[in-house]
Length: 237
Image 1 (cartoon, helix red, strand yellow):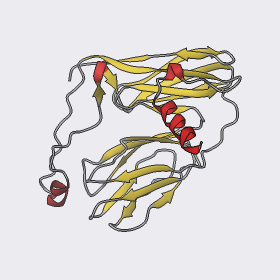
Image 2 (cartoon, one colour; image 1 turned 180 degrees about the vertical axis):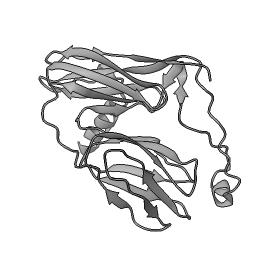
Image 3 (cartoon, helix red, strand yellow; image 1 turned 90 degrees about the vertical axis):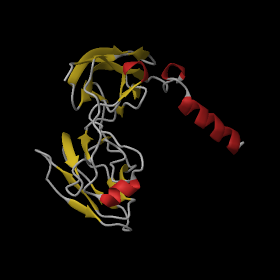
């Protein structure tokens, strides 16, 4: 019986959003983020001054400020409830994971909540560091030596924070700290889900590090599932 339940759970995760039923009295917003136009092409990362990183990357690694997928899907877009009847905010008890492997931030855009544990790991045989550059939260710079256990931290205030490794200049990303329980980051297919929304009127915002932000107003009724898409315009570089 437990195996059957586990299989059903796994299948439900793989289903498309339209097939996922929200909890009693709760609604859901789901959709896709795409682009029009011609975005700048990713650039080849030059690691020639860092032979240890070259060894860890036999294949060419590209920049990730604009990552696209099939059907003009746009990856690494943060979609979140930025206003409205979202109820009480509570930070997740599950740590947000930020790993470094093969001289690369494995998560380019990491979204989490104020007060939520940020757990940082180094899986490489060489040192890295994590250096967020906030304007609101306190700035810090954490060295992660090879073979050491994960290091934990938390941030106090909502903010979109560029983060870098001072040792390897191409290692860059974002911490997106959001004071809401409803947010998602798009993957290769550009899709997102904001489930378990109480009935009410909301502002939903989509943010991308290059293309900026878009916001939409929407009213969610009890048990309603709503489709909402965002389209960013990419100007040729």
